[in-house]
Image: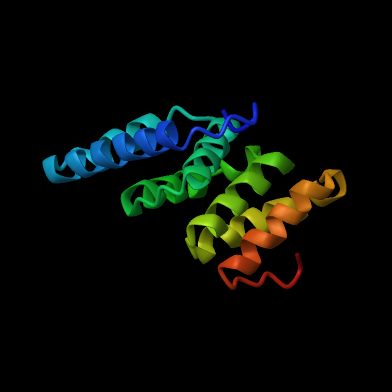
Length: 143
């Protein structure tokens, strides 16, 4: 809907409310984290970045979700599969939701520098990366 320019506040509120309710119900039942980990374990870098972007765009802040998402980013070798857009989407999502996980932000920045992703970044991607870091007050000097 966002890409089409359709601004249906009632629909977006219903989607956000349904997702928030499901997370709350699963948390009360104790099954949310395990279920989330299993689902996110199947995500590739683009899936994870799009998932983070979607929740941030809707303004849905869920601590268990963000904790599970950031742990997935930090899994051995996973961040090395990120392209410039994946880094930008995750950095922007963390900034938008106010998630200041310095381990993830450092891993993203280190990967972006090591893989020379900044040279291939579009202006919007670079802006999103920098905005995300600035929004949570994170500084990665080499970046």
